[in-house]
Amino acid sequence: MIRFRWLIALAAAALVGTAVAAPVLTQNGAKVDVEFTEWDTSTPNAHPHDPAFGPSGTLWYTGQRANTIGRVDMNTGQVREFALPGRHGPHGLVADRDGNIWYTGNAAGLIGKLDPKTGQVTEYKMPEPAARDPHTPIFDQSGILWFTVQGGNFVGRLDPRTGAVTLKQPSTSRSAPYGIVVLSNGTPVFDLFGRNAIGTIDPNTMAITEYALPEGARPRRIAVGRDDIVWYTDFPRGILGRLDLKTRQVREFASPGGRASLPYGITTTADGAVWYSESGVSPNTLVRFDPSTETFQKWNIPNGGGVVRHMVTAPNGDLLLAYSGVNKVGRVRIRKTT
Image (cartoon, rainbow, N blue to C red; front, side):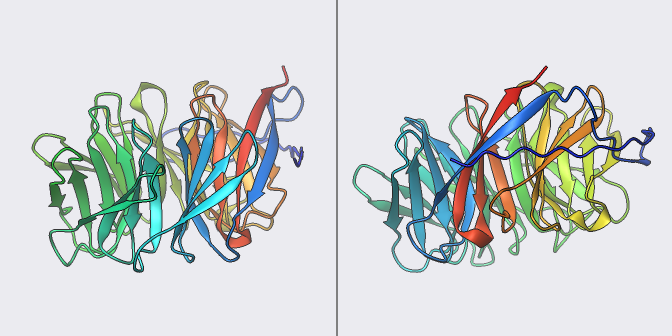
């Protein structure tokens, strides 16, 4: 286990509206500290892309270059990888209620389902050849799998009961649907990395509604916080963004690492905090933003990170990360200090 604590401080005035607020980092009385634990992938150069939480305290990851799905028993540290057929190039993944692992076959134009008990893989091909690169999957509350298709420019719906796949394109070509989350009412929300917009898709009609972000914004990953507020990492502008879908109001906060910090993977925790990683600094950082005080904390990632492309929150509040460039996956435990 690796323990690492690092806190940096400065003060600046917060702005309102759509103006970019300067980062305010906590000085004394920091609310939390973190503990990092990491595990190596079984295959060298596996390039673990996305993490997911599975049953019985397991961390799952996609070995994109190794064409594998990996599993870490976080209680024992045991790592196992499952070879996939053909060349699927797995990208994102998520576990269903029965413990099956669903993943996007980014290189094969399909969604795959891995049964960890048998190692058997079931393939669900895209109904349109243009939907060539499924990207990020997520389940809604009724068990329907939603996913983005970045280069193909689709948002998709897969019904596990029938295997039926339905696709819908945003209003503009090259929108590059990327991250996807689900609101408390079951509505999927996705970001358009190719444009300055975030969209929602009606679960029943597949109608898409788009919400404009400031000019030049390029949301790469998104998360949902309290009251269904949408948070996003604006990758090229070095900004953490906040979108209220009800009012369409956008607020922006400059990331502590500056304009070139390239914020990427993002998640939220039950206390309302927003967590994300800056991938443009070396080592990568783990950043916490407290919406109630509009202040940041940040820590260097001990292994360097190698770009944290996605992170998720486990049911117990731990953060799960994949460190793609250094072939490791990790857990972050959050501990209150005050």
